Every structure is written in C-alpha cells, then in structure tokens.
Length: 112
Image (tube, rainbow, N blue to C red; front, top):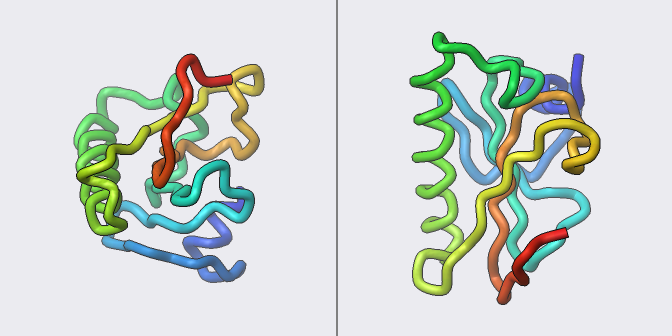
C-alpha cells in the first residue's frame, strides 16, 4: 500500500480538509507554500501517465474538487497553483496520483 492508501484507510493519521467517495484532500506535511494541500483519488492510480479512459470522470472530479478546496481555503481571490508530478524527475515521491494545491503567497515562474 502507498502512503496515500494508508491515509485513505485511516492506518496513518492526516490533517484532512475534504473528503467524498472519490477523493480525499489533506495538508502536506512539508509545505512549500502557506497553503499546501494534496488532493488524492481514492482509486490507486500510480501517476497521470498510467490513467486510462476509464479514469476520465475521476480525473475531472479531482480537478473540480481541487478548485472547490482551494476556494474553501480562501485562495479564490489571490490565486493558486495546481501541480501534478509525473515521475521522479518531476518530483514525484509517492507513486499514487495526487494534485498539489499551492497558494497563500506569490508563486514564482518557472517553477523548479
């Protein structure tokens, strides 16, 4: 089981800010911005490159809920960034698809 699967199964505690039947959003333990939340599909998909046509509705749900969580966290007016890493060179550290919601400060471009 991945770290996120263990959190979803409540085997590891987490600061959960949103949950429904398809996704779970939690605060990152090592935040890179004042607001750094991860939104994770409950279905284990190792990375975006491994998602298939059958995941289309879930991926749409994930992005819409990411926007909803960002708004709930007060980021709507100032803005926020959504990041999905794919592979180790992109910074992927947990092989379970997840989207970072970053905000609460000015974010530089380009990232990395």
